Image 1 (cartoon, rainbow, N blue to C red):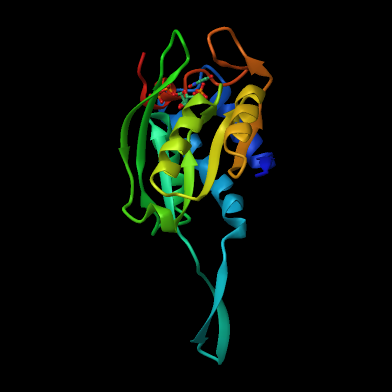
Image 2: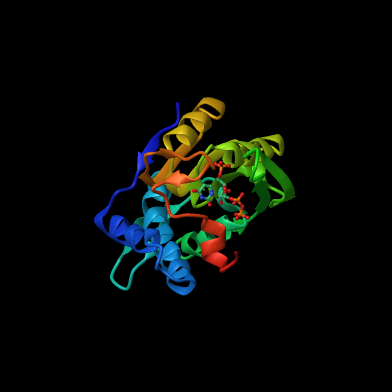
Length: 209
Ligand code: PRP
Ligand code: URA
């Protein structure tokens, strides 16, 4: 079973409080989502494999460490996942970026896939799927289905706010996928929103509605 990790570093908790506040405007919301994602990426990348390289410092030759193994693809679930891409690219600038378009039917809460464009060598990459919200889990499950259908095998899911219902559903459907969240909230309300959550992440990031 993949791990479920809540990344509750004080800086992350502090910044999450800023964006949960309903008075936080679009500009600050966007900036702080980016900052939280970078803080999370540092730890999500903790088990990236290293290899030895021979280099010369100004003083001596040495055997030093460099990243090896699988290359990275960052895959945001549109729209809201876009807000988390740059935060990861700051630390892993050579990563390729795929996109999966997914929206939730507001009545049924069922996810609908409308766009998939991935790096051609996705099966060789460590994939970081990003989306600020893990609510029912439907969007994340369908996005990971789409990735696996195209050959991806090494997948981590990174979100900001998660609900117990979504964590359970995602772990049941994709037990091989590690899940990282900045918070585990209380429950979903009757409209499928996370309580207390932060509202509609896409609308708050892009200033819509
Ligand atoms: C939001 C969010 C997730 C999804 C989570 O997207 O960004 O993708 O809902 O809900 P779930 O776990 O119940 O599937 P939304 O469908 O509102 O689309 P948007 O990003 O375009 O606003
Ligand atoms: N999608 C959001 O953007 N927010 C929620 O609380 C649930 C799903």
